[in-house]
Amino acid sequence: MEASPRNWVRNLLRSVIQFALRHSVSYQEFSKIARELYVESARTILEKDDLKVNISRLAALTGLHRREVNSALESGSLPYEAQALSIPIRVLNRWEQDPEFATKSGTPRVITFEGNNNEFDKLVHSISSSLNAGTVFFELERIGAVERTPRGLKMTEDFHRFGADPQKGFEVVGNDFDTLLGAVEENVFRRKKLTNVHFRTEYDNIFLSELPEVRRWLMKEAKDLHRRVRTFLSKRDKDLVRKTSEDEAGKKVTLCTFSLTDDF
Image 1 (cartoon, rainbow, N blue to C red):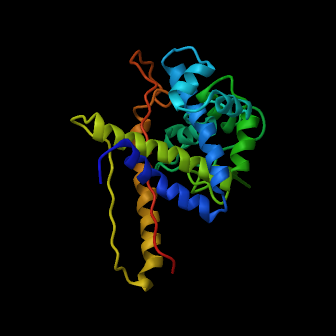
Image 2: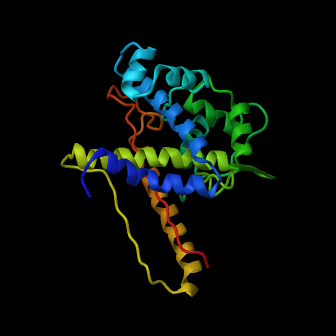
Image 3: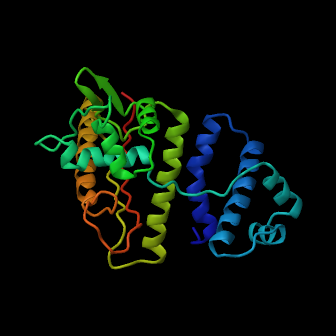
């Protein structure tokens, strides 16, 4: 097959279209979504290059007619921005990594969350003095990241997972795909001496009876890996390193892991 952007996009879209068909998204709906995203993405590109955004430039960049661009703009789509690490997750990361809020063995300890000068308020304000601790508490409890106990507030074990919330789950998938595509694009087109991680391991003749144990093992290994990664990166993150540093910060590092086994 000829190496061309058209064929690369075909490879990327095949799974997306199969997903759309499984969930009864028609071609007409898919086409409308694609048109809106073309205009949204074109606008983002122009703004990133500090260029004026107008109908003519959007039409030229996307190949759409001006009326189609207008229609997409009127639909209310907004420029996409990769989401920064949310405040609640930053709070949880500090709780997990800061010795002040951890046990001697290095695990997040139960902290007080009621009354004046409680430990949860102190934890939140260690990220930013302008944050409302009550708002952060509400969000953490809503997503199931914390639970109340007689001794205080406890962090749940799987706070980095998103459970069965479809909206949140597929927002994360979108971010994962954006990260993977960016990593491979750099490895292929702007290859550096230190490349991005892109590994795949697959076996296709596993015993059916072994699949439950395989899933349990993969989950444990992935959780352990991410715990080590968080410990490593937290020592290099300006939000979590207490010492004042004049070094430039604001750079993002992302590690995504996922697994899939056949049904059992």
